[in-house]
Length: 461
Image (tube, rainbow, N blue to C red; front, side):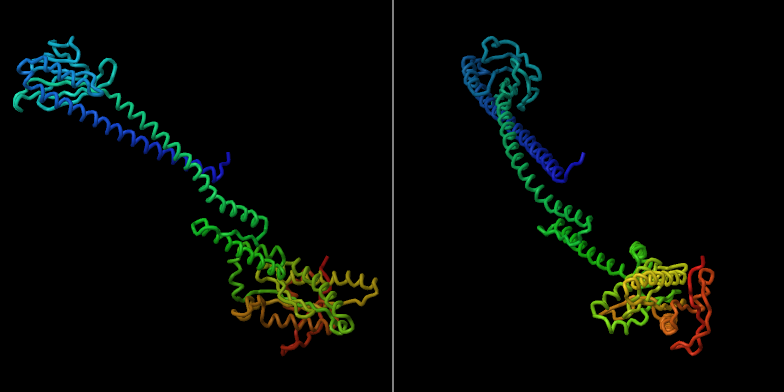
């Protein structure tokens, strides 16, 4: 069974209140009982002492009439159930009951004759009623013991007082318990309301809403938790924006793999040498064609071609490095390591040309001008990482001589009117996979010697 935090707080608070209230009540009752018991004892001793002082001489002289008067007077005190004057021989010389006169004293249960000259008090039962027997010695001249007084004081006052105390304690406890329950409800609401708001916020985050912010209502730990939650949602929103931005440069699968273990790819972001394949793809003759078109049409066509080229790059786990006007630059093997980056680059190039052929067929049917794309591919070591100003802007890119050669091959492909041009070094890695044609070495900018290249026609069946 699910128990809410609010109910837990209520139960805990109520149980604590009950425990504390009844503990205090029990303590008060015991203290009151002790106080009343002590008062009864002291009152009984005071009566017995007064009786003992007045009965010294009459007891020695045998003045039974006076002793009877003393006993009668003592009996009139509230709570006194019996009064006995016993001589040193243990004979009752005066009692509130004449039947006991001049009989041997038979102590009730739990009571004995005094063994010394100090007063004693013992609990006993008299006619079914619990009493306190006060025994006080009668000392003649303060030296010789001539008898003792036995006074039975009722404990009923103690019972009555105890019941009153219990009633009072229970009444007060109930009042405090009701107040405590009301306070507990308010306290539980005070505690759980911000928690409920946090739970609601967490559910919103779970549903993908990172704009949610929970209002902070206190400066305690709950308030600190609320602030931490708001900072977390802000951070998640920033990460979401970063992810969305990052997915524009790599495929969804590659992005997720990097996000699952970002530390693994942290080194490459800082800059490192890595074996990669580089692809440049450019829309051939786009600039002259754009001069005869409206700007809106130029943007529409450019976005259409760049989009399907980007899709091909992502399909084969490439990273979109940048758009350079109507040219696309893609990298394979960074930041995600690939066993066969050159193969992925070649498959991307063939996919782009396949899509171009299909698109051109539609344009011919619509009476529109066809478009061709020249692609250059190279492979080798390059430096990959964040390049730029740390304070202003950083771009994740790849640089090096092998990158420059790939760009030169793309330019050469356009000038030679071929679709896919690949360096001999890169071709060796995919020779078993593609149908290609070797052509004479070509001269490219930045290279002293001619570069050996191949024209890729298609994948082998």
